[in-house]
Structure formats: C-alpha cells, structure tokens
Length: 100
Image 1 (spheres, rainbow, N blue to C red):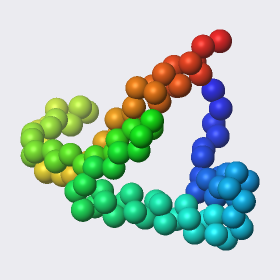
Image 2 (image 1 turned 135 degrees about the vertical axis):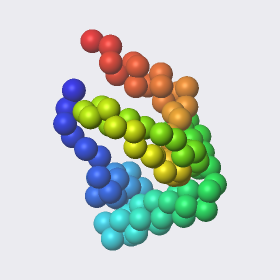
Image 3 (image 1 turned 90 degrees about the vertical axis):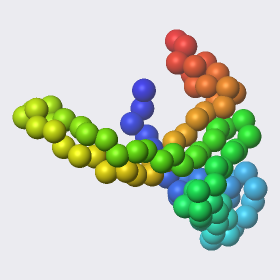
C-alpha cells in the first residue's frame, strides 16, 4: 500500500492531460466542481456521483459519552457529519485492487 495522497493539483493535472485544457483552466474546473459539491452538502443536499458513491449529511443527536481514561461522563453535543457511501462498482474496484 502506498502513502500517496491524491490532491487538487493531481486532479487538475489529470484534467489537463486527458481533456487538454490549460493548467489554469483545469485547476479552475476542479475548484468549480469541488465548490459545487461542498455548497450542496452545506445546504443539506446529498451528492450522488454515478459509479463512484454518495456523499450525504447526517444529523447526530446529543448523547452522553465517557472518557475512556478517567471513566468520567461527558456530554457530546448534537452535530452534523459528512458520510460517504461508495457505489457497488467502486467497492468492486477497490476489492479487485487488493488481490495479489
């Protein structure tokens, strides 16, 4: 397994290489797509990308947690969390990549 992380610049370079846009246009396109995704999530909408997966927002209720070190009860406040559910095609691709 590699420690490589895919960055915005890597995505922009891929768009530049595969689509043929200039590097600046590619970077702007990637930024625009990511901004649309984040704006939709902030608005509480789900984002479904076919053959990739679905990003959605989930509201978690308040609850009582426990500090494992001291055993002290601590209130955990309600919050919104981002969830990702990969598509079956993505799951299959990832599983196929794990085979030796």
